[in-house]
Structures are given as C-alpha cells and as structure tokens.
Length: 222
Image (tube, rainbow, N blue to C red; front, side, top):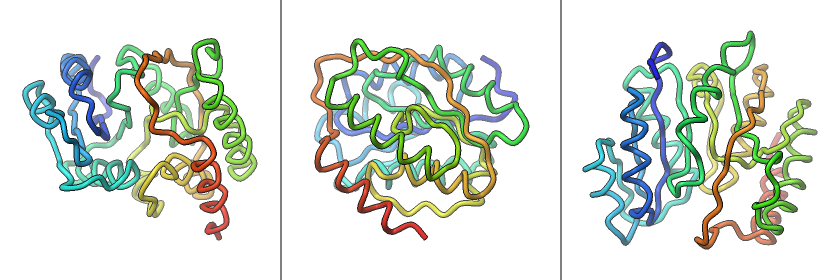
C-alpha cells in the first residue's frame, strides 16, 4: 500500500505480546507509520512492538483505551500525519482491510470510516452482539447518521476531524464520543465491511457495566 495520505496507525495495547509483533510487521510492510500505546502491560508487549518496528508510547499504569487513543492521535498529529487509523492490537482486525477504510475517506465530506462487523455475526459472542446493537442504535440516533457498528475499534479518521473535536474520554466511551463529536462538527461517517477474527481470548468488554457507563456518558453530552 502506498502512503498518499500520510497515514499513521495508532494501536492501543494491553498485554498483547502474542499478537502485536505480527500486526506491526504487516503494517510496516504496507509502508505505514505505526505507534503502539502500551497501556501498562505486564507482559513483553512494548519490547515486542519495538522489535517489530513500531514507535512505542508507554503508560506506567493502565489508563484506559480512551487515553491511549488520545495519546496516539496526538503523537501522529504532532508528526504531521494527515490520516490516523485506530486498530486493536489483539489480532481481531486484518491489515488487508485497511486500504478500503482509507479509500472510503475519499468521498466528499467524509471524516470517519468505521469498520462494520455486523455482516458477520456468526462468530460474534452473543453478549457483545446485543451490547453493540443497543449502543449503535443510540449512536446512530445522536449522529443523525446510520452507524451499524459504532463500537468497532478499526476506523480511519481524517486529522481535520481530530483538529476540530474535543476528545475527553478515558475508556471505551472514546469510540462513541469520536463519532458523535465528528457528526456534530458536520462530518459524514461511513461504514466499511471488514473481516473480524474472534479467538478464545477473554474480552475486556463488560456488557452490563459498559452499557450503563455508555448511557451515563450520553447524559454528559450537551
């Protein structure tokens, strides 16, 4: 993949030493800058990511996905990248899908391209499916745009969007906050079908607690 839009991939990472190295190697082979934000891992995640060719930012203690993404976005913007791609580090997302996310940003007014896993529900855990459907319905209503998979962590964002919107979330609310603020700033959001791989690892998403926190977050919006 060429780099006409000067892209940087931001990967929030917590104890993903088993998968992060291969992911970084694939992304670097595509000519992309990669920054891994290690969120207080207790395994060799930072060392593996560095050896694979990523720049690594480290939190001394776990601060949450929101803080990790915000730090990674700031790092990429400070280095002049025009496009920031957020991607999970646990092997769920395929680098091969990234060019289609980037291509989707070429349409007029599009500021964010979000991966859509909802066409491949067979392997998605039931609790995650229900939680995601509920959250996506609420986000779509607030954005006044249809976002079928609002909680997907694989997304491409124009730097112009990040320059315009304030992001303050510390944890998983960052996924929702970014979409709502981008829509309110007048940017279009498009969804791109992606392949998602579910392994046997335990998800850090807690359906009940995270849904409650999601609606609590919505009450803070003005």
